[in-house]
Length: 366
Image (tube, rainbow, N blue to C red; front, side, top):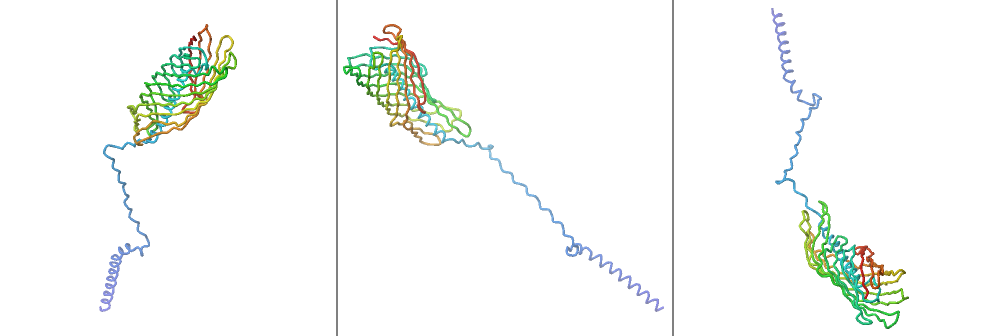
């Protein structure tokens, strides 16, 4: 009996111990799963949330417009206007020389000529009158329109007058002297200027009034080579003034750097050295050629402008040199009646450039 009881106690103890072991394992298993050193498996990192960019706020009224640029170009464009005004002075001097008989011989009988020309549209009359055996009066009046390099003189009366003293009592080879003036008041003129901005080019035409005045002296030597030939060489000194009334840019759809130009006076002095030859061909045809080298001295621009974005702008111009030429063919239709074809112009760099003026005339000698 005692032996069976001991065996039963031992069996019960074994069962209790086995149950306690199972409970112990069951309680320790979750801790092992949380312990990375025991499991050997690295835990997966948690993903970081992605950042969302902050939108840029839009200004009230929409996207702002870019600012126009090109103020410097607007100021520089006034240099072109300076060249236009210089060219105007020189063209006026060339047209005045035609009225003073530059295409005719130095010594001839009294005459009067009506003429018209193109290149510059000109219509007028000129002539000469002998006051004494040595002294003659030369003069003429005309109406003209001309332009070059962006400017246009749309209306201009012009007059030229001079006295010539020819030492005829010295014989066939002798000196002569001229003293005269060229006047062109009440001119109507348009000047143009262009400049470039970041939005594109700007082109402007402005209208104003101007007037041109000049005085000159000429000293030369004339030689009668034969009854059919006369040659002469001379030097001329000119002083030119050009008065231009003030004006502003016209109204334009786009002109961010507008200019206002004050009233001013341009001026220059000219030295002209040259000669001419007149020949009577067979069949009663007269021919004349003339040419002068010209140098300007003391050139001054009267432009003083106020330009938006630049302030005060005062362009300058240097001294220039060029060549002036002329020629004429005269057809003696009847005693005292001559039909003339003539041409005059300039050759040289800008702002004078290459110009040509040609025309026809009817001359009466008396």
